[in-house]
Image 1 (spheres, rainbow, N blue to C red):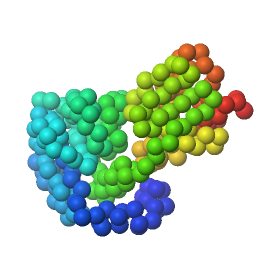
Image 2 (image 1 turned 90 degrees about the horizontal axis):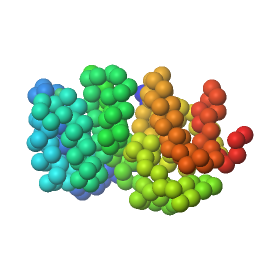
Image 3 (image 1 turned 90 degrees about the vertical axis):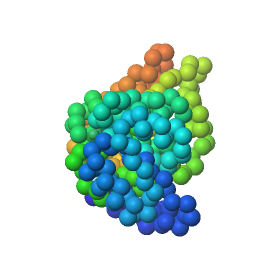
Image 4 (image 1 turned 180 degrees about the horizontal axis):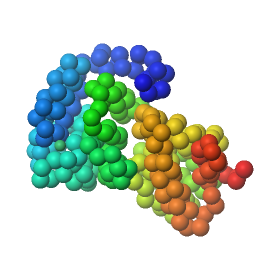
Length: 247
Ligand code: CA
C-alpha cells in the first residue's frame, strides 16, 4: 500500500461522500471488458461514470461537458490517447487526467505526463490501486495553494503557473512545474526521490525513481538556461534540495 494512504486520515475522503453532487468521471477505453469493469467498480463507489470507446468520442464528451476527472487509455483506435490529451489541454480542459498504459517504457509515461496527464497507471492494475489514484487526484484538485513562491530571483505563481528568473520567463511542462512547486514549497529541506514521486504523482514509483532524475535534470537545465546561479541542488545518494547556497 502506498505510504500516502497509510498516512492519510479518513476525513478528506469523507468530504467527497458528504458532497451533494457526485463526482463525474469520464472513462476513455476501447476494450469493452475493461470499460465495463471500470464503470461498475467506480459506480459502486458512488461516482457518476461515462464511457467513451474511442478518442473522437472522448473529445466530443470532454469538450462539451465538465468532468471532475478523466481516465484515459493511451492505446485507442484512430485518435490515440496522447493526441486526445494534448487537444484537451490545448482547449483548456483542466480536469485531472489519469492515463492507463499497457506499455512499461519510461518514455511513454514521460510523454503522457508531458502532454498534461496528472498520473498514470500501468496495465494490468488492481482496482484498489486505481481507486486510490482517483481519490488522490480529486483531493489534490480541491486544495487551495495560491500564494506566490519565491527563492532568490526565482518566482513561481501557482495560479497562472508563470515561472520567472529575474526578467526571464521559463516554460515548463506540467510535470516539471509540479516538481518545482513541490521542491520550492519545501525549500531548504532535502527531499528524497521517493518523497518527490509520492507528492508529485501521489504514489510510490516502486524503485523506478530514475524518472524523477529525468524531470529534475530537465527542470534544472531550464532554470539555469540564462546562466543563472544554481538553486536546485543534488544531494548525492539522497535526493534534491532547493536553496540559495551550494552547501
Ligand atoms: Ca486500449
